[in-house]
Image (cartoon, rainbow, N blue to C red; front, side, top):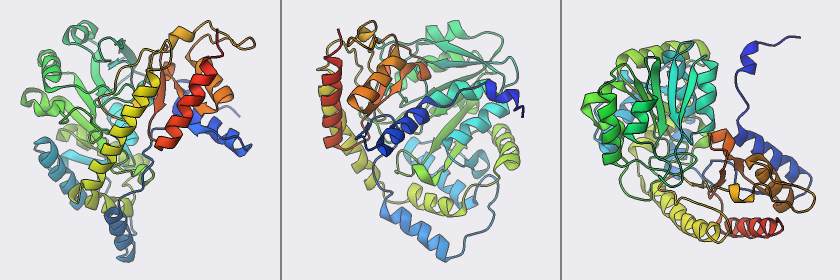
Length: 396
């Protein structure tokens, strides 16, 4: 049997691959501590679960409109006004089966073969692969630990060519934890004002997990608002990863295009998840804020433990729930039987020796770094980093 050549254009997500390897070791009875997966280790708040149970009992069990129920799209608009002071109408919103589908819809609606998509490194593993699926060309802007993993206006301007179609970034960023300030966004906006044909995909899924203050959306700048597609969802801020619900907010041309695409792929997303999402977006935000407070405590402890590791260069994340240290100090080192040549070797060494899972930085466009999550209990975080320190001490 010969499969489609499409499958050769993109790679399996490294995040899912490492999680799978960890599960296989656990199935053998090995105590693996998972620092690889990007998922809050909290339960969905009770008032959201109650809304889902009510929806089941009220028999919301039929097909849903492709862009989402009207009350949910209105709730998204209410949230965008309340949290971000942004004005959108329901026709600008398309609800999808997770923010990943929202990104896929947007890329497929915008990118033709040969179009260039600018992505600052590091970036979420799926960004580059979606561009490849659409036959576009990924143009990376390399950022560094020293500049807090953020791109500058000058770097952006230098990367733009007549073929540039899309600029895609996240703030807060997975994996680096970088958060763009209003001033930093304003500098980028001055560049985009000169290039009205470029669409900006702004992934804001980690909006509520912010350690430095108020979230700033690039859509707040009226001069380029029509160029912006906001990508967001409920997975991270409401501990609803398994509910699979994301959304876009965009101009009506793009929202209609995404609706058309989605109509031939999944149609409307789960009715029960949508009714729960209304409760999440319009209800009590205290559980989300309390979750962020706990992540703040774990961040402090994780940074304390990471900074005690010889050779690591680590940026203090401003949002999300990861650290992304430069581990290249260990490249070329050996324990006598294994030699660490790159980030993939480093991650596999920790998995097989320390029984701690992580994700190599190559998947995020940064081959000198490795991503570690602190979406785990404080006890497991301390145990994991003790194991990591012990395993790395054996390398010379």
